[in-house]
Image (cartoon, rainbow, N blue to C red; front, side, top):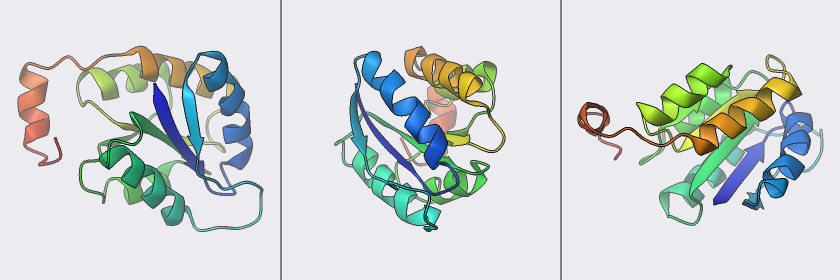
Length: 143
């Protein structure tokens, strides 16, 4: 699977933890930045990742900031994006199974690296359930 991943300075350290895990799982990674802890604006990176996902240049995206809230809000402004801020394996699973989320948002300052790795693994392996859930997400206008 091709995954576009981006972070701001507040999510950089968690991104560094997730990159080798994603590669070890066999995924192709498109790291769009940021590349250090210097202050940057999170909407810039949300925009790049979401454009890659919407255009079909990535199968899904992962966005990381300090809390995950800013990235989630910025991503959900983009056409064709269903971004989910997840803090545990259950929300990760449900965001895919029920909502067909195509962007996962994480907060480095609220989710530890071990939990974040488990969230990502569950999110990537969970499939969309379709059925009544498809009808509901079609009401979003972003399918």
